Image (cartoon, rainbow, N blue to C red; front, side, top):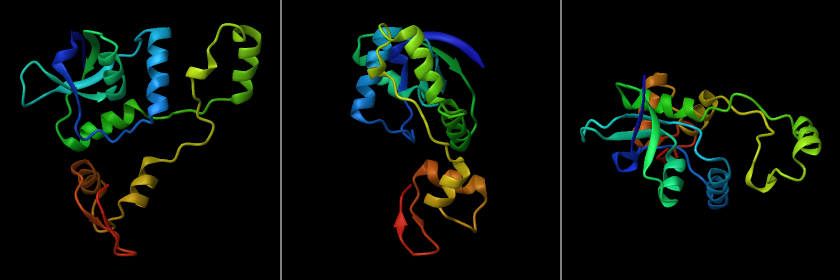
Length: 172
């Protein structure tokens, strides 16, 4: 891994990015950036099609927000995945939800220290237990005859999958 600062024109979103964002969450993100600045590095890998350019594996939504806000450079950490499946692993890791927020503790700290200064409107917390990725893949891309790696490859490449239980076909 290597840390770099590059022109925003030399990075672009990963076309297979599995993350989606709601319009109101995008607006909140922009407000957070305006309030707190950009304190997280992008996670990128070299673009094999374009020398000196990078594909964003982590920070795609931030990229759109800061580009729209007129920023000209980004700080990034370069990783070197050798397959699309590995790229997916980096993207999932960058957005992994490791813990849950204790609502009572947030309320206590807010009341004590931030009641008149913290703009709670621009934040959202997770209050439920995240599901393991393996469970989601099994639910939305059931392929009992394939290995875990082959199933992830199908998801990344958006290959048509047929559910063995009901026969429905879909692209994950």
